[in-house]
Every structure is written in structure tokens, then in C-alpha cells.
Length: 120
Image (tube, rainbow, N blue to C red):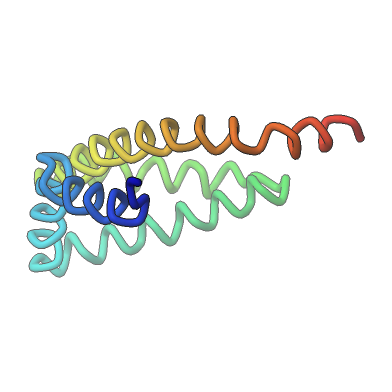
């Protein structure tokens, strides 16, 4: 019988060997060595978190959204940060695809719970 935990560990090892993972890890190491790039990224993520929380609460702030867009545009002029976002997007796409595959199996396995919740 196949040990699912062993397969999960194998999948984690395989993930670390992908070009997407390697590129993302490498560019992160480069960004960490550049204090200005790190500070810009920190400011961007802080503003992104703020905007996301406002949107979740239903209180979007146009000024904060505009500031976030401006920060992103500014970072696109830094080749290292541009590479960071490109690598993040490729790695994110890979992770999303894997999550979708696993999610389909999980959904199939939880059909009864889904049916019961739909009956509310």
C-alpha cells in the first residue's frame, strides 16, 4: 500500500527541484542583499496588506489603492524586483495548479458535507 505521507514528502522534494522554485529562491536571496530593494518590497507588502484588509472589510480606500499601484509601478523600474515579481508569479501559478489538483480530490472526498451545507 502506498504511504501518502511518503508521497507528500517526495512531492515537496520534487517541488524544490523545479525551475520555478529555484528561480524564486535565487531572486529572493538577491533581493535580501539589496537594502533598498528589500525596503521597497516591505513597503509594498505592507500597503498590499492594508488594501486587502480594507477590501475585506468593505471599506476600500481609493488613495491607498492608488499608492499601491504607484509602488508596484516604481518597483517595475528595478530589474531585480521586476524579476522577483515574475518569479513569484510563475511559482504561484505552479502552486495554484497543484492546489487545484489536490482540491479536486478533497472536494470529491467531502461530497456529503458539501451536500449537507447546500441544504441550509
